[in-house]
Image (cartoon, rainbow, N blue to C red; front, top):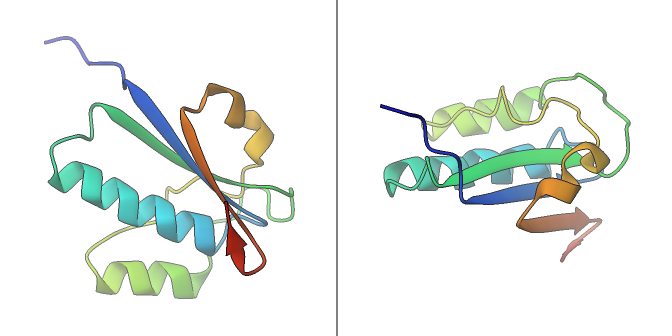
Length: 100
């Protein structure tokens, strides 16, 4: 069977990509898997600033995800949003206390 290419892509952005966007990434990916849409929707996360290149999500973020049966260890490790934003269908950005 041939792998299907995702029809849509969703990108979650926050400043450093170690707390908010990896959390949203993990939750949304979990929802896509359990709704049977994982092959149709590519989920990714990134930072608006390159503050934490290559770093895993914050240990508290990982702990809270694990407590809820999710993982965020592979959620866009410290990547900048410019690398993935152009190929994205939808994006959500968190800046300070607001989201867009």
